[in-house]
Image (tube, rainbow, N blue to C red; front, side):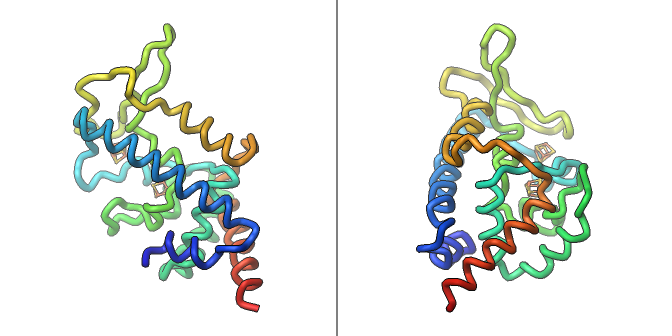
Length: 196
Ligand code: SF4
Ligand code: SF4
């Protein structure tokens, strides 16, 4: 059983179970839509590249944080991750504390990563006349963008709106280290309640 399945099962019946289920479903849909576009249009990061994670620190919303926190609480690497988050407190730029060059996708929590990490260099935005434009990655010249863009190409803004709709329009964000440290404590509180 992977960490997400463990987290969903371990927190089932608690006050945050519904949020976790909704995010799991939303991320599954996002993955399926983006993968389908990327495969069809040949969008590809060069193998081994993780420049974005080494330079970027995401700020995250309530549900993104709860999902990541639940994943971390059930991860075998929890202690190491907590240490990294503590060390990154107060940071406003990268590297992201979850960046790990030794991992296949350079992220210690890849399956639960925030939304922007799923959308960056994989989606489009609206140009001045409303036309779809692909958001290219300019950090690595070997990045391969799409061969074509049509009306089915995923729009970054739509995913943000869908996520906000899930969490009741609460759009307050906070940098990943501080937010996760608070929410991991909250998740552990719920785990403790279940164990009583
Ligand atoms: S090509 Fe760009 S988006 Fe892809 S991993 Fe490298 S830096 Fe990140
Ligand atoms: S959460 Fe993971 S994917 Fe996102 S910036 Fe950090 S290391 Fe990269």
